Picture 1 (cartoon, rainbow, N blue to C red):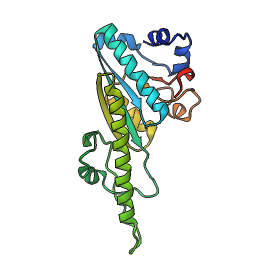
Picture 2 (cartoon, helix red, strand yellow):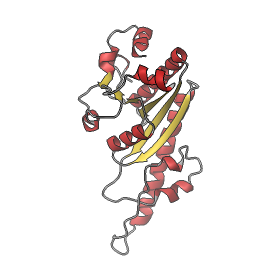
Picture 3 (cartoon, helix red, strand yellow):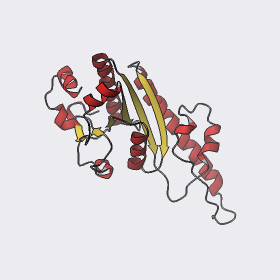
Picture 4 (spheres, helix red, strand yellow):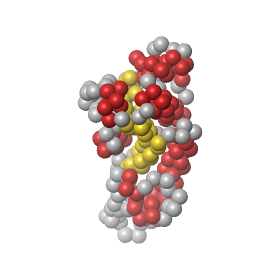
Length: 214
């Protein structure tokens, strides 16, 4: 599929640019031919580079479906980094009031509990509630953005909202969904996130080539 992408945009150096972490087990083509389905995970945060990563993933999914007649699902994962200074309200209670939230609550990694050891008389609770609601509204916007972009390809799409360490949460989703490829908006193996994922990551990790960056 990367070879097809190279041919489509007239390049011959995309593979070496895009493979940030190689797959340690079976090749992608072997998985697709055996399972008749594939899952492509995209780390998405609304940035131009994550837009590019999602677009490439959708293009590859579309081409794979045409070439192999396999079901290919693209899944966008947005991870909200935890605030370790003051973990806020129970995210499930807040999410229940957000009727427009695109993702299902079952896809949220874990609730964030309220620490009740603040001194009496502090105004921390209303502030944390406002911050939590703002965070969820932003997450809703970003996930809607990913869904809108993916709909242009008219393929199978899912979204995940996770809270915690980005590398750990991405790995959890990759394992949970038995993903074949993780797409990142990175252009180099020297990116800190690549180093954090490590060399024993469950699937291949692809980035975006410099020639189509943003």
